[in-house]
Length: 170
Image (spheres, rainbow, N blue to C red):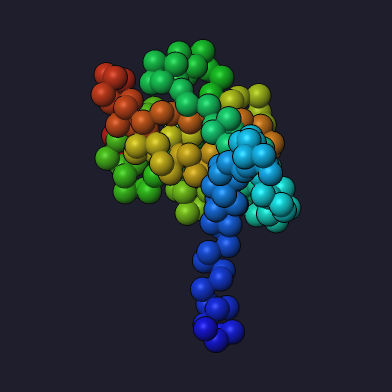
């Protein structure tokens, strides 16, 4: 295989290196007397994991599920009633026009910038979208910027409506 061809194949395979090394560690070894030894990590395993950016089993640059707090529609409704929520809908303006949770601000995901949210006014930010995927993306961005967990509506506005909660047309 030519060096140029190898250079094309190597980068896509690099993320698999820690997994392959971990699998290799699953094998058993035997000493000279034929006794089985406990599996151990192969030489350089820790270095490979560090090189891949893994810390505590999690790749660097990713956020853990702990950065997002999923609220049920009922929990969100209680918080809205208490008045301590800044609700942000990250759907498109067209989607919001079809119905939104009362009092929600619309900041589409493609325009969502945690730095532009401004300083906290004491209210807790809660994000939602149609099904929960886009709000999770926005929530991870916000959590990375603030270093704090971010609340999202689990299941998005679909779950909100399925729970019988009110939606206003805009």
